[in-house]
Image (cartoon, rainbow, N blue to C red; front, side, top):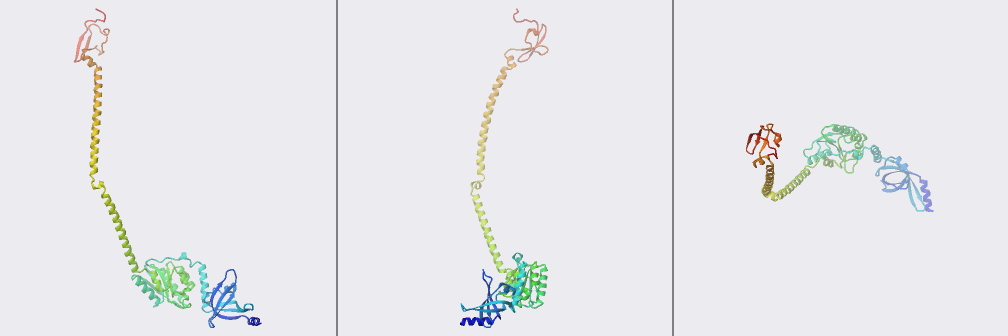
Amino acid sequence: MIARAVRGWVERLGAVWVEAQLIEINRRSGTRTIFLTLRDKLAEVSVSATVSPITLDSAGPLAEGATVVARIKPTFFESSGRFVFSCDAITPIGEGRLLARLEQTKRLLQAEGLFAPALKKSLPFLPRAVGLVTGAGSAAERDVVENARRRWPAVRIITRYALVQGPQACEQIIAAVEQLDRHPEVDVIVIARGGGSVEDLLPFSDEGLIRAVAACRTPVVSAIGHESDSPILDLVADHRASTPTDAAKRIVPDVADEAARVAQARQRMIQAVSGLVGRQQEFLNSLRSRPVLLDPAGSFARRYEQLADLRHRSDRAIGSTIERESALVGHQLARVRAMSPQATLERGYSILLDQQGTAVRSVNQVTSEDDLLAQLADGQLMIKVLELRPRGEG
């Protein structure tokens, strides 16, 4: 009976508007119901309320930690004795409204692809000049300049001052960024400011500034606030620094570290060259220990012996060949001489030639009183035919 009475009283209460901090948004898979955890700042009481996706989306982008005004209606279940709250309207207020608007702007720019990693430009190793956009006389300027010069004393910093909060801040920051982007020697631009509230950092989430930074040809480093601060500029910048001091560490190298690296590189090169020279010296020593290099003329002596042997063999071969050929020529000469007419003449024979120089082989070729030429071994005789005696007569 008590539970039923409580239920009737709660149902007659109806919906109430409450101001609370949105602690958690729990979207459970498999159901369209979303659970919100709301905390009353004054009473220090937290409750869980259900809300439909349509109701939540109509409030715009909501981030956990935002302050909202929600209309909730309590319901009491008799069986379990539990209160259940349902929310049918929710609206961000104050900082929560501001965060919701920033979240909406962030989603719009992200949908255009301005935060894509492919658009990020790498920082130069050692820029010719560093462009700095910051407030005049600010702690952020001092942190960037002092830390950058401590790391690299010769760094050149070109500063453009601008308001960093207030209604005129966006216009001045955009003008400073565009001016530095056109500077021929500026290789990196740093936008720096110290910490502050969400309202103070609003200029660095302005859509105009975000688009101006996205259009820069020069790499841009965002150094806004502290580690926990995250304006939209951090997403579009080519590099995000957690603090202005961190930005100084990113834009220039540390001269001490680089000197140490150079010393290490020199030492490694010396070791490499020494090792190479040592290996080549060992190779040369190995070559010098070879017999041909210990006594270069030794091979010539062996070649001289081989050449002398070859000459001796050649002389013997040529002498033998000449002897054989000489003997052959002698035999051929003897045969020729044995068959020559001169040899016949030397044996007492002669050759008779008539007046035409024709050899006389028969008595029928001449007549009495013919003049003949007798060819002897040692000369010639002119003879006259006195008488012809054919063979078989007298």
